[in-house]
Amino acid sequence: MQHESPIKRRPTRQVMVGSVPVGGGAPISVQSMTNTRTTDVDATVAQIQAIERAGADIVRVSVPTMEAAEAFKLIKQQTRIPLVADIHFDYRIALKVAEYGADCLRINPGNIGNEERIRAVVDAARERNIPIRIGVNAGSLERDIQEKYGEPTPAALVESAMRHVKILQDLDFHNFKVSVKASDVFLAVDAYRLLSDAIDQPIHLGITEAGGQRAGAVKSAIGLGLLLSEGIGDTLRVSLAADPVEEVKVGFDILKSLRIRSRGINFIACPSCSRQEFDVIGTVNALEQRLEDVTTAMDVSIIGCVVNGPGEALVSDLGLAGSNRKSGFYLGGERQKERLDNDRLVELLEERIRKQAAIKEQQIAVKEVKE
Image 1 (tube, rainbow, N blue to C red):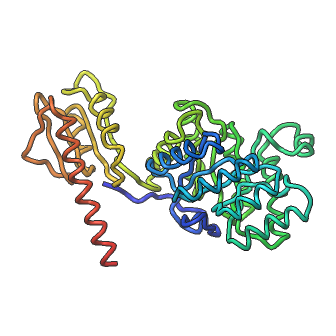
Image 2 (cartoon, helix red, strand yellow):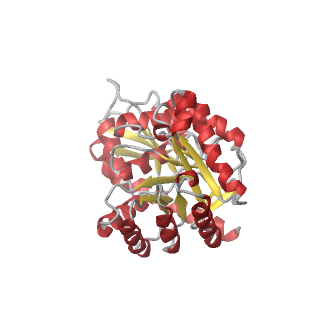
Image 3 (tube, rainbow, N blue to C red):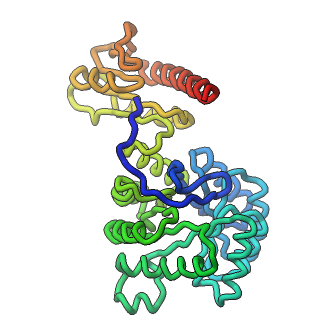
């Protein structure tokens, strides 16, 4: 049973990335980024669609060349999800993807040349109501800032960010969001804290280059979790050396664990011990794979014994308490007369979870119509 998060969000302005609101109290959006060659239109479109199916709200696409910009035009025509064009240094690429319908430009204005070029990009963004993301990375700070601080520090990251912010503000452009990413958790967290005190624009969270799927997920959960628990952050990307779809899953798991935003099933499962009456680990793993398509927010507890099983089941949408041969089944916190055969748990639970998800979706639809 879903509970509201006690976290109080930091108030910000709001920007629109296509149809997705970011900041201003909007739900925290989850992003990922394609890792195909952008010039391979078919592969990139296929990956964007896979990321979208995983639940992402926004997808970022690297556009390093004019050839990639032309491919971006074709990609945009074949996809629905809002696309952020990731651009470095060449202002002409920014102008081209703005023309081709980019929903956001990830570009640091101070890196694209003289004032005339910066103004051209800002005017193009203003004319089409395209937000800009200023993205500062600890690994690519300006040379003078590196020399000033000697190494990446929170103050160095924020000074770099504010340099770009000032350029936009001097041009009376306020439709932007900012990130200050680092691969070190403490560096990133402290930088974001400083940034949140310095601006009222939305903040894009990320622990950059976090690592492989397991280690990167842990680092991201710690870093982003600390910030989100303080109300900092309006959109996020989990950066993993893995399939981008996994980034989306981890992003939603982080939000789900903090009760900020729920999507799909939250499995509450014991680590198993000698008290277990069925294969808890195998059952949970099988159900996670089978039910990846379910987007309804639900708590499902699967506990292998009667010690903790009933207590967890009482506060879950659907629960199972392991017992000899047949296990106790709970629905909406109430024990059901029906007991489930331990040899068929995966099949029986999938059927009941899907049925309950459909009922919840219908209830939500009726409520929305009434409102």
